[in-house]
Image 1 (cartoon, one colour):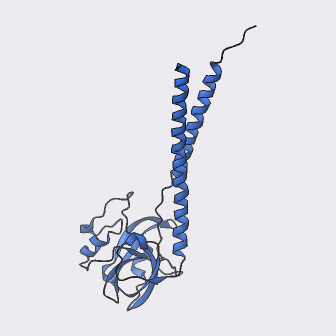
Image 2 (image 1 turned 180 degrees about the vertical axis):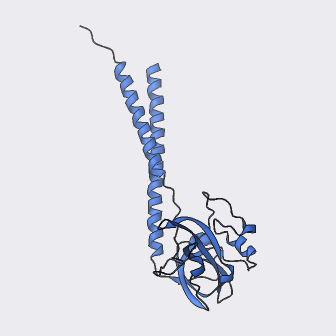
Amino acid sequence: MKKKTIHTIVIGLIFLSVTALGTQQEIQMKAEIARVVQIKTLMTKPSVPMPEKINFPSTFEYRRVTLAGQFLHDHKFLIHSKRTLGGVSGYHMLVPFQRASGGIVMVNRGWISNTEIPKAYHPKGTIMIEGIVQLPRENSSMPPNDPSKNIWYWADVNAMATAGKLKTPSPVVIIISSKTSGVYPSSGVVEIKIRSDYGVRAVFWYVLALSLLIGFLIRHQSQKPKLSF
C-alpha cells in the first residue's frame, strides 16, 4: 500500500473520530436543553400534597407540593449566598418545618440581607405552605460547612438536624417560590443544575475536524504533479 494511501486513511479515520466527538457533544447539548424545558414544565404543574415518605427523591425533584405544619423558627439556619439583591449580600434562610403528620422538612424561605434578619417575617401556628422540591447539593464554589460554628454554605439537612437536635428530616428541601412585596425572606431561587459547556465542546471538535480537512486538502493539492510544457 502506498504511503500516500496510508496517510489518507489515517487522516480520514481521525476526521471521522473528531467529527463523532462533536456530534456526541451536540446530542448531549440538545438533551440538556430538553431536560431544562421538562423541568420548567414540571414546575408549572398544579401542586400536589407532599408524600409522607419520598423513597426516590430524584424522581420527585422540581415538583410543586403543598404541606401543612408549623415552622420551628428557633432552629433556623442561614446559608451564605452568592446571590445579591440591589448589590446587597445576604443569606438563604432555611427553617425546619414540623409537618402536621409529625415529620420534619427543611424549607428554604428565601433570600434575606443582614439588616433584614431582625425584621424577618415569622408565620406562627399551623399553616399550609406551597413550594418546589429540590435535592440538597453541595456548593462546589463555596467553602465546606462548619456546623460547630453554625456556618453553612449548602443545605446539608442531616447535619443541620443533628446541630438542631431534630429528628431525621426528609431528604429534600422545599423552596418557597412565591414572593410577597416588602416581606423578607424574599422567596427562594430554584437552581437548575445543568451542563452548559456542551455547545462549546461541540464547536471545538467541529472546528478541529474542519481544520484537519482543510490541512489535508491543502497538502494533497500541493503534492499534485505539475505539468510542464
